[in-house]
Image 1: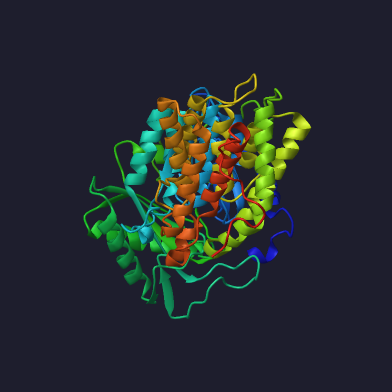
Image 2: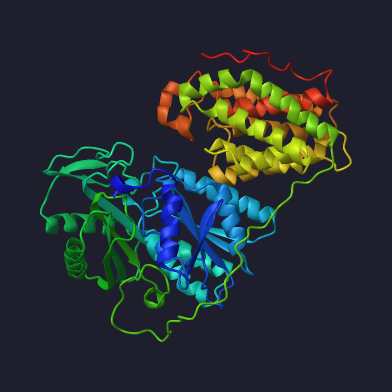
Length: 576
């Protein structure tokens, strides 16, 4: 499959191809990229928005349309969509009662969907999230991230799509989605890895007589490599593992037999019979056994099994007809609900335009300029620190985002912190960039419209709200060795200064941020990319926490120059 991807804009080109094949049903918004359904049920009051890395088709885009999703945000191959894609798709698709996000539990997906949700709430659009986490292979008490989201996403999207067309509210849909996730588990195996689009070779090697057990949909290796058993024995083993992990409940189950890209329909149909027999022998009633390729991993040769314990009415939601590119198999019995085939009027494609606030607040712009100078001075050292604990791109990403903010402020007259928020939320990728954007968004609200020094109360509220938003999105708390190790103590210091009327509150907040940032050198990271290197991170302060401390130092330098901590000269931040 990956041998024939276009050299440029492969994902956008594929999206255009899907819309071309389903004219009248699907439209493509190219910048930022998302697809939206033209044929929405008029009874729907909540928009359903999903998305994720490309390479899993027909996942997400296959269920775009009546009885399914309102909008889909595709990322690059095996990479999460940017929060701007999700934000603008959701804003365009939002209905009277808001938007529900359906998110697979991968760090990039979770963070970008959460940031988009924060932005939507900031605009007054109600939003809720259903987090799909069904992969049995990653069900570990030692993990802070939980189970991966895999093929149960199809079950969630189908059931919620039918319920949304019946007029379910945002709260009802969110509750239904969470119950479906709680009652679903999946496990996957592979005999051959997917083809790497870069090397055009298998991403990893497997002997002919072995299988990887517990693989992921991004081509992740399994939890173990096993000798290849007979197919019946393999299905029996997978069924046992799923039932051991599946929560107790009714005997009626939905069983999804999902191909990972290169598994034939012949094989999937045969496996579906074997699975149905295994479930029946164990006293369960497989009301629905559904074979097909629904959640691929490019062209991986393998399959996954998903079991969902059915509550009353869920089987009927599954069998409700859809008008989507993917036609899901269903029993021969016909539900009462008839399939609608008449397209509705075309929805507006334009994304809402949000103009930055202006006002020429001198202190606010001075903060942007001072922070830009500081970041430029320490960029190389931040990069060196990140090379020790991550992938080495933090210094460049931070400096690039600040440069974009300066350009935006110059060209539009936007306030300094507003420009920082827009630049980091819309244009800076990775994990830390959008998280900084959330903090800057709340900080922008603290600057008085008439100019001058922001009040301690407003700054305390902004810092606390920024920390709360980052915690909601990424789950980080002080002690995890992330940027919040500097942000949280600064917020606490500002709150204490507000209550005690401290003479130099910004200086004390900056000092608290510095202490928090430097203390990360003694922590073993629990979140973020640094968590992958374990004890190798000890002795290295977190670059993101240092960047937060530098911002508070710049804030103190502008408003309390007599007491502010000394800003770093070039090379001041040392590398172990």
